[in-house]
Amino acid sequence: MNQSRFWPMQEGINEIIATVRLHAAPMGVICRGDRIMMAVFRSSHTASLIEETGLVVANIMHDPVIFVRAAFSDLDPDDFIEFEEAGHQVCRLSSAESWVVYRSRIDQKTEQKLLVSLEPIRIELAESTIVPINRGFNSVIEAAVHGTRYVLTRDSALKDKIDHHVDLVKRCGGERELEALRLLQGYLS
Image (cartoon, rainbow, N blue to C red):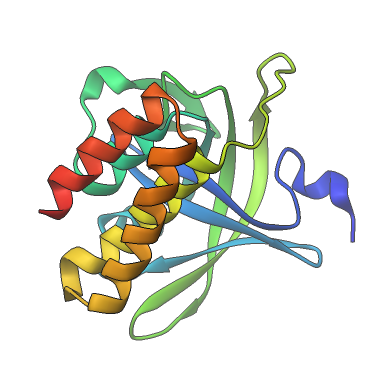
């Protein structure tokens, strides 16, 4: 594996906020072997925009409130910065600490998902900042992922997982994580 190909991502699934035009959604960028890819639900607005534009921006950030807002609602136009890349207008989040513009290629379409290969064409990194692991932040992300499925299915097993992460956020999170949790609970009620 050529680790530098993934940089600034790491092997595994990297949680980012993907932007395509003025649309933002939390997404997992998958780095496995020598591939960078995403699996995107075909019914999502993100999937149709990726198919249409062929570009996606991975916004790297540590703000749990933005993750929750992007998962459950549209962000404000003021949350974005538009610029030109590869002859196309693209958008990134103004609050992103770092970001990567990827050229996207649809490798596989199933009834439910698109498997999209990603090729980095521009990388913008913030100055080095040490961000320690915060279990509260991680649990907000996990609860939001489960929450996006829960609002569609009302599956009690998903609710149990959300409740587990809510407890961790309350125990381990700071003010921003607790604010994100209150926002998330509002979307789930």
